Length: 149
Image 1 (tube, rainbow, N blue to C red):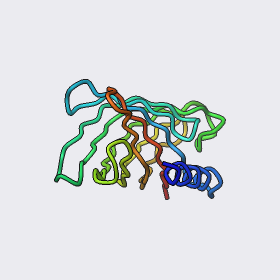
Image 2 (image 1 turned 120 degrees about the horizontal axis):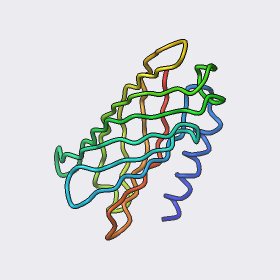
Image 3 (image 1 turned 45 degrees about the vertical axis):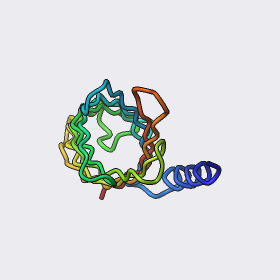
Image 4 (image 1 turned 90 degrees about the vertical axis):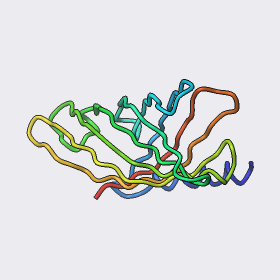
């Protein structure tokens, strides 16, 4: 458990102190006795969103997590510099099941189409992180570092 906490501190510190293009995401997902899940996220503490996800078992060791959602960003922190931005995102994450029951690492890629007053652009985000599944709960919490070119 101590190694997990140390790894998380290094993981979060690296993403916060990194150059532009790196973002720390904190997500929570609520599952209700099905494979589908409702996700809410705070991306780099400036972008908020909501989405729907679906988890599929690929093998005993791997799951695929598919997500589709919408987000909005605060104008003073967004790249658009011209007001509130809105975006649509989709991503696929591959989760490894055999580390532990409560902590599962993942990696994946996503697309985010951003709509701003003067410009529209698409970001490709590559992500790595950890999903935390508390025992006997209907939710999970994710810490993720994403990089967009």
